[in-house]
Amino acid sequence: MFSHTKAEICGRNWIFMDELLKKNHARCMDILDIQGFPYLRGTRQVLEMAGSLQSKYAYHQWLELLRRIDLTARYKELFMLPDSDLEKFCAKAGIECFPGRIRAYVARCSAIIMGDEKRNHGFQETLKKKAAEALKNPLHGSVKCFENSKTMDGLLTEDVLNKVSNPQKSSGVRKSASYLEQRIQRSKQAGKY
Figure 1 (cartoon, rainbow, N blue to C red):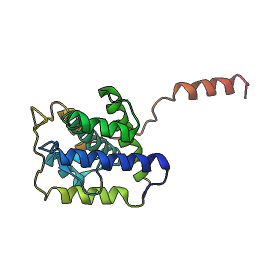
Figure 2: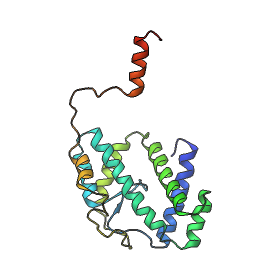
Figure 3: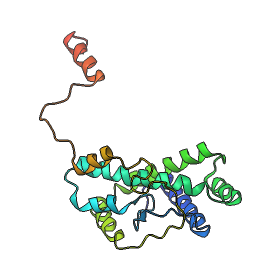
C-alpha cells in the first residue's frame, strides 16, 4: 500500500490512533470521514466543492483544507482521550507524551501519508469520488469540538473558501525570479559561469 517505510509506520500508527478515538467515542461531530482517506475530513460545504474544482490550484487548496479540517478536529479528539490511552498512542508512536510533541507527530504523519498516497494512480479522481460519496453518510461524531460549526472556529473563512471556489487567475506574466535565480543571472553576466 505504501511506497516507503515512514509512510507505512505512520499508517499503522494512524489506524491505532483511530481505533482509540472510536473506542472512546471521541470523534467530532459536524465533519464527515472520507472512506479510504483517514487523514482527510470535511464539512458538507467543503465536500460539495469536489465536483466544481476548476484548476490544479483550486484542487490543491481544497486538498489542504480537508487535511487541516482533519488535523484541527484530531488534535481536539486526541486530548479528550483518557490519559492511559493517550500514553498508549505515544508509546506506539515512540514519542514523548506532551501536547506539542503529539501535535507535531500527527501533523508530520498526515503529510507523510498524504504525500505517499498522492503518488498512486488516480488519487485525485478517487478522492473526489469518495468525497462525493461521503455526503450521503450521516454525521457520526458524538462530541462537539467546535463552537461555530459553520466556520469551524475560523478555519473556514470566506477567504479560504474563495481560494477553492474562485482560484487565482494567471496573469500571463512570469513572476519575478527568485533571489537565487537573480544571483545566478548576475553571476553569469559577470562571467563567473
